[in-house]
Length: 228
Image 1: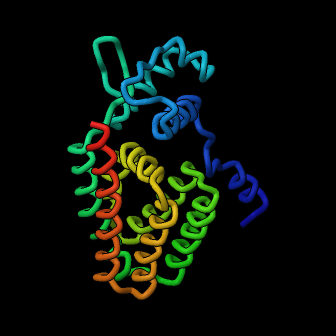
Image 2: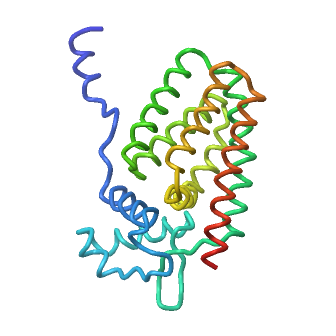
């Protein structure tokens, strides 16, 4: 490559900076997932503008996006934080079990040394954030773990579906993490999924995945039915 070509190549933006709308969306999504904004709470545009330091047009875009993700719903008084009940949660866990178990099985068939190393790094980060009892860190590490699995398995459409549900999945994860020992039992179950992938054992990987989702679903059912 010539010096001029190198200089031109250096102009390319590999990781474009997030827009103000993307930053505001991420902050609002995390606030809802963490419980800072509670189910049923009214989302007042003027207040949100002041809290986030952005314009009303940005807030309106963010609210529309969060509504599409199922984190916000429209009521007579305006947008509010969407609630979640066991019937909704049950369907989400059923979708997760079906899509994730198929993806981990295909990942186990295809995983090479490089994929296994990436998964191991994601799990190390999950262990680190779990020991710190950091829900945001746990969510990010778990999402990265599954993203690698879906990419490796070639299930791009399934990952698109999971991504659209990710806000509600994350809300359920935060809720179950609040129960005793879940910050240790959850990562331990995910380790079993990885162990099967590491052995290139698709049946064991799928079984471990279904067991992990089932355990989370039982915790969520107990909490949501008690709340209702």
